[in-house]
Picture 1 (cartoon, rainbow, N blue to C red):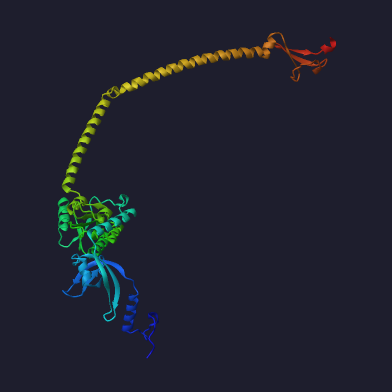
Picture 2 (cartoon, helix red, strand yellow):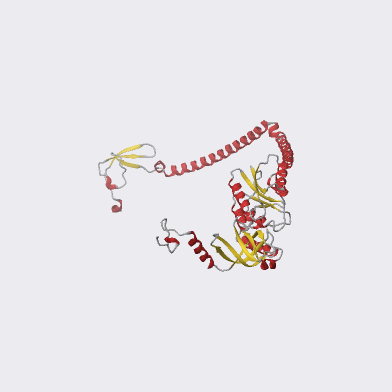
Length: 416
């Protein structure tokens, strides 16, 4: 016979542990666990008269998990009559593993019912924690559509809340369409079923708004709607969520995280769809206002047109041309007068310049008795040494000219 492995990691298909060894090792491991406090809900209680030991089944308040708890009858009696099935309790117990049955159970040394005050204190502490995280902030809340294509509704099976929402919503908008999920709305299954329904409706492509409705109840009945996992699921939903839990005075944490709180399921119906009769009245009123505004505008424009038509320019269009003709003629006359004055002034200026030019011209010099002497080649003779005796010269006078022959030349400076 092969040697039995010492540890679980050493086991193989050819060298397995026998069931008894696995069970003993689990019991040994569990026995090393410390005594602890655990919370749950009593779903079954077996207490026989005269028996020294009682048994109860403790279920998780959210998940479908349970453990058997054994405790002495005197411990159970000391806890009082609040430990009936459905009660929420905390148990101080030591985990034990029964090797024969292969089952885990708790051996309780103390049990206490969780009172309403303690539950409310926990809810308030959770509210403060979630508020500090911003899950209740107004900025993160999503607006509801004016007219949802399809309304997701999470309600109890055969509950009044479904009737209140559906009937009142269709009374306001007869074409309202619903996608309904009937779930447990109290007890240990409520959180899981509501969360699952919320996820389904949030993923539905036609659902534009989700209503979670319940027709009131005691504080204990509304506890699932203050559950942290459900609150976080609502906060993470991409579809707007309306909370319609309980009555006006009820305020589970779902009311704070929802995008809109309705005081009752009937109030939710009023808030998720418009009233078709009211909308028609508003449309009719708007049409009347539009007609009045249009009539007033037409009358005002007609008065404006009448005023334009009565203006002299429109009554006799030629009047405008006559006025413009008179203006053009006046401008033309002024232009002619200005041009004539300018022309006269320029004539005087030219006459003055002509007189100056004449006074400075060679002819004027000749008229005063001077003459211009040029050589036969036409060069002007200015000095005595430009010619010589016997040279032929031409003398231009004020009137006519002379041909002359030089008899002698003189240097006047030397002669003097």
